[in-house]
Amino acid sequence: MATATKDMCVASLVEPWKGDSNSVPVTEFFVSINEAAEMGRLSAKDKMRLARLKLRGAARMFYVSQPELRADDISYADFRAAFVNRFKDKHIDQYYYARLQNASQEKNESPEVFLDRLRKLCQQTIRSSDNPLEQGIINQEADKRLLAAFVNGLIGAIPPSDLRSLSLYYYAVSPTDKNTKHAQMPYTCGHILRNNTNSTNANHREE
Image 1 (cartoon, rainbow, N blue to C red):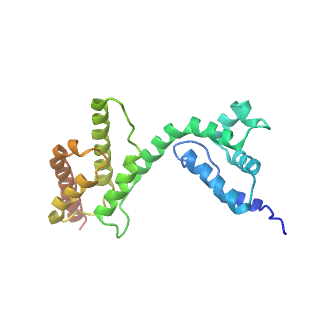
Image 2 (cartoon, rainbow, N blue to C red; image 1 turned 45 degrees about the vertical axis):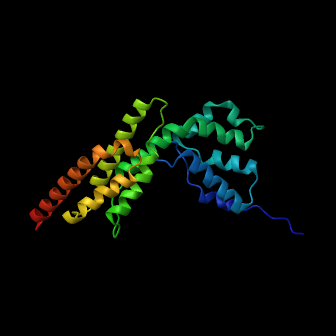
Image 3 (cartoon, rainbow, N blue to C red; image 1 turned 30 degrees about the horizontal axis):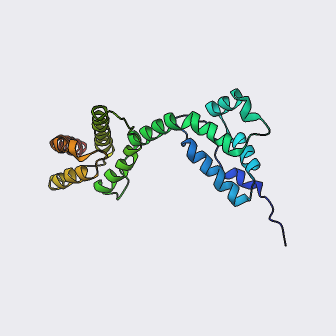
C-alpha cells in the first residue's frame, strides 16, 4: 500500500498574518492553516511550523515574547489557543467594524440585499451585557451603525415609492430586539429620504 506523501507547496496558499485590524480574524487564519494542511497531508507539527512561518507584525512580536510558544513540546492545539486568546475578541471587533464602515452597494445588488449583507456584518460588532439597560444602549448603537453604513454605502437614489417598504425591511432585519425598533422607524425613513434627496440633487448638479 502506497504511503501518502506530504505536499509542502500548500504553504503558498496561506497568507502571512499580522494580527492587526487590516488582517483577517485569528480564527480565519488558523482555518486557512488547517485547510492547507488537509490538502497537503501535513501533520500537526507541520501545521505549527507553517503558522510560525506566516506570522508578521504584532503576531510575530507576540510569538517572540512568549517562550512557551517556541518550545519543542508545545502542541498545535495549545499554540492555536494562545493566539486565539490573545487576538480574538479585540481583533474581530476591529475587523468587522472596518468591513461595515467600508461596505458599499455592489453593482446589480438591490438595497434590500445590501442591507441584509450589512446586517450580518453588524451582528458581529454587537457585544453582550448582563445589564438589560446597557444591552439596550448597545443595541441602539448597533442599529445606528447599521443605518449609517447603509446610507453611506448606497449607490444612487432610491425611488420614493420604495422608501416605505425599505424602512419596513430595515425593521424586519435590524440586528437588535424589536422592542426598541418601533421608535426608530421614522428615524430610519427620514435618514434614507434625506440621503435620497441629496443624491438626487447631486445628480442634477452633475448633469
